[in-house]
Image 1 (cartoon, rainbow, N blue to C red):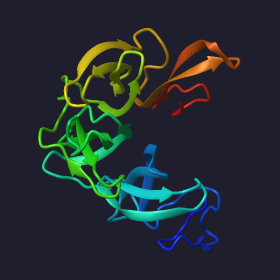
Image 2: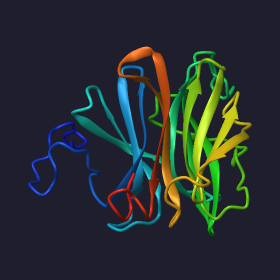
Image 3: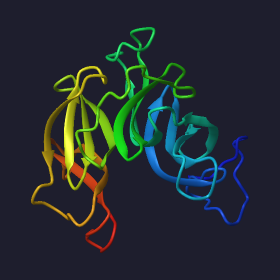
Image 4: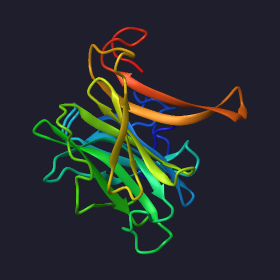
Length: 239
């Protein structure tokens, strides 16, 4: 992905990559949701607008028509009284299940982790203009902290077979699964990790998706990805 300026022109800085997205300046890390809506791809990412080191976490935002040329947009999510904005994901609520959009057409919703004074909780924000501007849900947090130090990075998707939203979230040295009919009220449905994988550090940034085995659409498997701070197959931190 070419780095682009606000004018959509390729950046000619020789110290920047030409085939990977970069922020215009300062710290950038975890991508927090790549979503396609109304003819545009939207990329959100962890961002510190105040310096070149980790801290003051916001969500940066860029959009693209082709996944190659990117246009920088204003910051999507900023810290508030509940804390700074850690990682999460973005979904299109086509059926307006959350009831927060003015029409049945639905809109774009972000599910993210709040962090304040060591407390991690999950919040919701919605956009009525395709992801350009955002409004945080007045009832945040939508998931309170279940007495865990590490409880973050929700990945959410809509499971059409059951008609419900599914979330996988890092919870210490394992993951938890949650289910919701409206993105607002969530119920824990299970967990995974005890007795499996590396437990020398916390787990982060999980993902859950379904794939066809050897291209056979009648034979599918669910794939769970997780990043570990210690004990990755190649050593140290990894996925």
